[in-house]
Picture 1 (cartoon, rainbow, N blue to C red):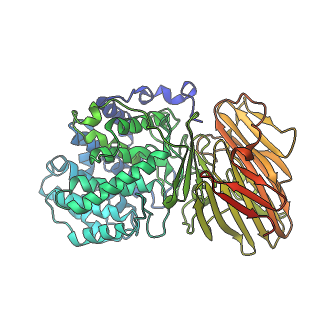
Picture 2 (picture 1 turned 30 degrees about the horizontal axis):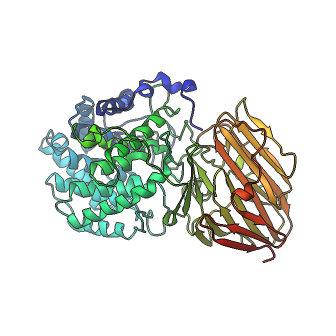
Picture 3 (picture 1 turned 120 degrees about the vertical axis):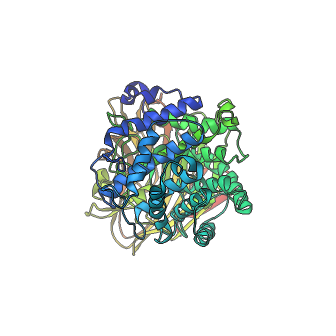
Length: 626
């Protein structure tokens, strides 16, 4: 469901036609991204104001954030031998922003302050280009910069990926020959190690979520540390590299041949930071994938993103995913936040004759149709013919307070072709936009609840199970039989109150070519357009089907969508609901959904039991009377 380039207004911007083949092309892409920012800098160049939308830490800090995020791109450009006058603008901003007597001073920070996040970019700069950031400063300016950054060692960071910000600042001090807090550096590294799970996966803090913060935070920073302090701390550097190598085999499953990657979790407005991990692998010279494969992963991802409608008319990145969208944003997304995506420009730090730049770009290696990622609670299914990837999700025992947590972490399926939707409100199915969810409301209430966290959660081959309680007297046991293009969802609902239930399929673009299809037999509904087909079919328990038209701007990939949905009213007691769900990208040539979805997935429904044959041939019996 990528936006079609021929209708994409971004083609009026030079970056959309950048071939992104050579190092010079990537250097030019950096300029195409940051030159439109020039008119938005403050007089002293220490602040970057890109909009007026709100963020919880306020506009002054947001403008400092915008300034700092540009460093993630320009620092590797300079480290790799590139030159650009834009750096003089940045240096002036650093001088003024760290000067307590200047009107644009970035200020004293406090515990859990957003500016602690932004200091990491300065540690990055001190590590890679100390001669360019430290060398030009006079003694007073050096004192100002050091004292402002050293607040990192007196104020607290959240007990999650934030601990790496302290690591990067102290690493920068150490690489630049400045005093650093060795004790705190070691303490934070040891604590970060406690977040490690297995197979390359970290959680974002003990019991935290598992998402893109694993590749573009934990591994990215760990690989920087391994490369820059490998001689001083070889044992830890080796561990970081070994874990990253193992994770590479997991994370590559999230990518598809056209360059796009799985929309899942929070902070998706960082967009092409999706591919930052691959650049860090190349920079740290981790021998796990060839330079040609790494090069292809990064450059295809950037090309895909630069074809999307992610810029405003001036060429400034917007908040959103495939188009400008505040509905899906986090409370911590300021107008400058998206420029964290510049972390994907780390390969610019590699010399011109490095194997990364000399290698021929290679496609994705051959990947299997099913891949279980136990630490992440996911089963990845890949349809080779279409390139479609879906991550089926068993649910999580904990949750967080970030925006749209249920939509970003608790749907049954996340698709590279159909994206996912967030709610505008919990009132009604249209405002809720409940794709890939079972939504429940009390009878005549119209306020819907979905899975937010699971009492139990497990994966057995391609069968995912969770138990969740939307109310104290309602328990839902859910089995998802993962597969493509069909998958099966089975729910046992034990309820002490009357409920309305709605089972949503994949969200599909709503456009003039949309075709709605109602099957001649049974209960179900599907929709097709030039981008694909989405449908749901009742196998047990549902009474009717409807094509829900959600509120606009709820889906990450398309501003207007439809969601095929099965519905039923439930009385107090125990009920079984079984649905077959279909999703396939590409223009449909059929006027109806393909037949026999249960046979494809080896799911047999009898009067008393459901027999599921797993991907590996194991039989699982679910007793309907239990």
